[in-house]
Image (cartoon, rainbow, N blue to C red; front, side, top):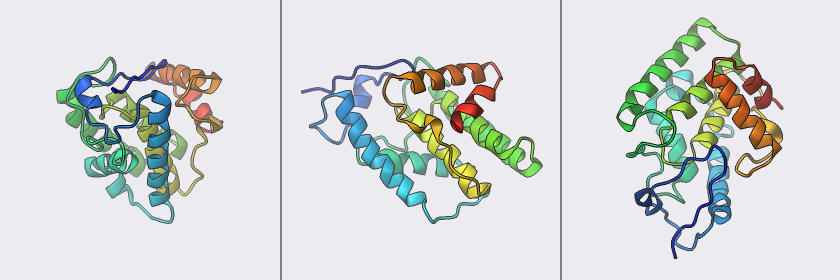
Length: 198
């Protein structure tokens, strides 16, 4: 029995080779997949609790990859590995590393020079990271957790609420989130900043 996924607005389809990386053969539907991924993500969130991370660690490719691996290693063989296929969104697969390096360098600059308020640094980082789309799956959830790590560990502020609901299923919150991302694509971060704290 194969993995039968129904995608909703804003989700990136997996190719067949990526689907073969599923580590739990009993998963057959998107609902089941979301359930197992959420359990794994909760373990990753637990791992961040009580730990301190310096900007010099957070703003590295190694950390970006390790957080994705912690979030998805129980579900996907390719957790923490940059995608090898091009998608309907994101950087070309050959540009992921260089685009990520530009983002990490920018983030260090923003932090060191107080270029933006803390919430905006975290949200801009999240937006650029999800725009690169480093991994085959989980980029939205991964970028939100990284924004939470940045705001909490670097700036000692509460994590974001992200609409205070799951964004993995269709609904008003997901629609507002996707709309805010599209507005941020045009350079206006206001709606995404507001959504992050809603």
